[in-house]
Amino acid sequence: MWDQESFDTLKAGLAVPLKVTWDKKASVEKYGRVNAFLAVLRVFQELRFKVFTPEAQSKCQLVLRPADRRLTDRRKRSFTIVGHDTGRPITSLRRGGLTIDLYFNYHFFVQAETTCRQYFPSASVILRLRNFLRMAITPSPGSWGSDIIGITVDWPGTAVIETAVVDIPAPLRRHFRGYKLVPAAGKLLLTSRKPRTKFAQLLRNNRFDLSVEVSDAQGCIVALRKFVDDFLSVQERRCAASASTL
Image 1 (cartoon, one colour):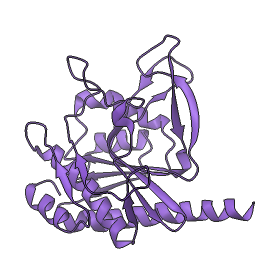
Image 2 (cartoon, rainbow, N blue to C red):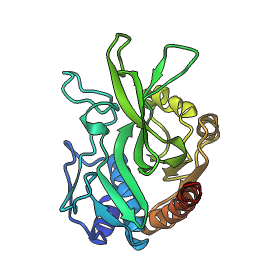
Image 3 (cartoon, rainbow, N blue to C red):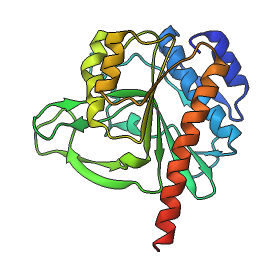
């Protein structure tokens, strides 16, 4: 799960070509994020979902860029916060009436209603049902002026998969705390070992439903299969309920 061997194993089992640009070097943390994404694809592949671009055309190749976790670079040339180019899904998956968008290394934009503080919690992988997305207008992230952006929202159709080798690094904790304001359908953390007491409390405070220890590619697939099955079960019920009211 956290090394080249797991990456090679997961990549070899994909039905679509994959290219990874490692941005200088492939660290343990980057392997964890990339391998979590590959394992999610393997799970959906086993569930007979077809891979598409967000525009519903057949996908020829997936390209991942596992950059270091940051909102922007020093020269302000690269942004990863929602509302910018990297806020788009990497790919989409379809089976029957369900369309699931997959995001990689993505930052949510959330804002507390009682303060002016903004949070940008980041996730290794995000699953989001496209069927019920709706547009919301909000101030542009990082700005208190009049500029606004439109973002798509469907919290009951959103699930979060985060990775942490041992702990959430101190520089990221401020943004990670924003997850308490993200009412996603499910939040899963994959770690290399059981979280320490203090870290476990951080997870509970930010409403993470589950933390799972994974050491290899197969263990990651097993953990994610249950998480994805539960997520899809809820989304199928939502779609059935919506169809019955028409």
